[in-house]
Length: 470
Image (cartoon, rainbow, N blue to C red):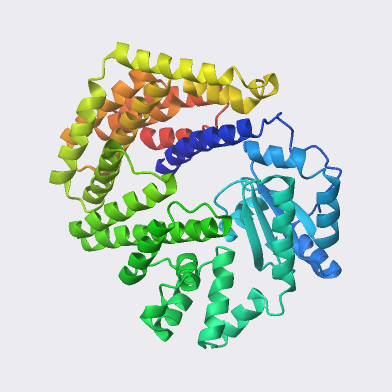
């Protein structure tokens, strides 16, 4: 059930992101199923696609989308029917579309580590990634990305060939430099090859922008020296707005984040709380660069508390975990109802003022309606979600019956705010763990009924109910 809860929350967040991007582009709700008049898309299986690409000796362009992605619809409406785009792509590629949440699209999206929508993948006839771009930058931007992909496909030595050379044992520095640069450019890191490369060049050379790009695009494991160099360069690039420099900055920022997360994993594995201080400091610095301004003190404090709370929980240091959580819960449980209502109303009024300038076509879109419903109760949603998350965390991790009793109280409070399937499921699990099986079964059944009434998939809840009845 943990994965279903995470999926539910992530979907809510992604709907919000998609709506914001769609409003900027003034989405009209164009359907992805509309037949484009520009790009001609191949229909068939993945295997058949690669066979056709080999037959025509063309690389493949893959549009990776989801049904709920607003920017995906903008790209489908604006770019795909465009004659210039059609001419370029029909001449240069075999074009293909996949829904990342359906059929073969799930595996393809996983294989190429797709993490945002839309993502444009350009692959060889063998399926090796040549180039990728995320988001939609307009017709001109799409044509520019296509040129990059064509250039990558026409390079005398392809990444596909270099992978074979590396597997055969090739390890000279010029080769490794080119090989790792190519992998960094398509977001397909090879940390083992990076370690070999760094071991062959002087440490004094690590700090060149070329090598920082290589490190950032291939690092998956923490390296103290490399992370220090990346963080230092990231701070220097903070205020630079040149597009070429911004690309380097984004790549370095991703490298800092990746290595920092590995450092946090090491801190947990070794139960070393001092390393958590480094993780927090690195993360704050990373976010300040991303925001191009200093983090407010309250946000920095919340970041630190979140890392420490996770560290204490993962290392089963419940004596330190409980006080951190109880301090947060005490605030959440005592927020006056009129204060929550006032914040909801204030936030919604601000949204309504901003929405006045939006065209009717945007206001009629499904994305707008979803976001409108969500923004009506922003403070309510924030408090209820947090109480439910904490209660579920206690259910999954805490050892004592007293912990479960406390979590049940918090879960009940979340239901006072929103009696939705996910919260009911948490409450039912806590009741079951406390031995109150009949009550648990009744509440889980309510979760199923509400999920079905809302058109949601209730399969996971039904499975949990069956387990509770055993």
